[in-house]
Length: 399
Image 1 (cartoon, rainbow, N blue to C red):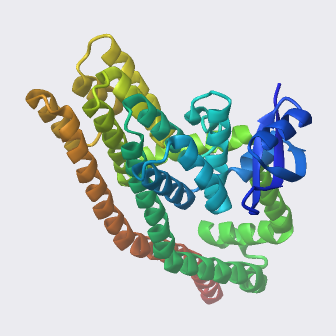
Image 2 (image 1 turned 180 degrees about the vertical axis):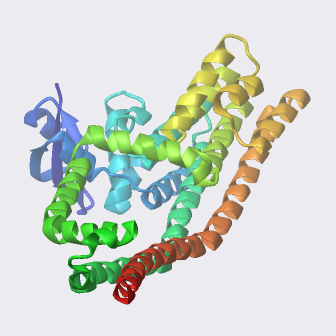
């Protein structure tokens, strides 16, 4: 059984290199560093959870890694040489997966195998892309496709973050105002309702009860929420379950089809690469499906691949099992009819990426007004409950 080690060593050029490797024991880890002409300063065993945290790959780092590897391969370097350069020269977030793939290659294993056990959609996609490149013999092309996909995903997250700044400010300010209102104003007004609680409207009684409960149990509830959040963040099974739930939501109409179209765009690009290289359809689609980020869509595509292997037409199998966007379906049918499935899938990838951009802009345009409207209704409901209570008291006073 191998152990994971973190190391810090000096390369022959004098540069300090930091990374991680797996070896049966410390002596073997030292021997592997020596074979790579590295002089270690530090070599420490680490747990699996520490390794996963240190190798957490985001879209921006994956974009930089795949773009660099593709450029180096285009320049004539071999894949091991490109991985060596990337592991030594790129920032740590991008260098860690390059180092992992480099070590796998040194052990005689497929480079993609080093990333298959990693958490997170970017690592899964990168593993699938490398495997697709290895299968098709067009690794540089596959990496360029991946760089484009990672770039779109990174831009998507950046634009979403920018678009959510104003709604986040509105939500925070509104919740802070409501909290102050419930903690400070409602208890003061509640004194005016003493002795007349049974005659108050149901909404006013509910508001008063919620205020009392929150004042009594607010600290405990907040602590429990923090504890549950910490547990979810530290437990791998919980993270996996939440990730699958998020994947289902993004693949549903609630996601407006943005993430779905980005996934099918990557799937179409990688399928086109393999098909144009002469890879059989079932193998081409299977390899491309592994690189899909969304686990829900990936499982559906795996079911479609199984049907393709037993003779079903790819367009029918994918349409029946994965329910892809209509533009993808039309172009795939066209590709089968013309005998140019690889070319039409490449066009489908460009079209789906464009559709995702348009839907993202639409989402940004409607998200702010919807959030503002919902918060306004909540605030209006709280205020109206108190006014109804005060109105009922004035009616009692006139009797």
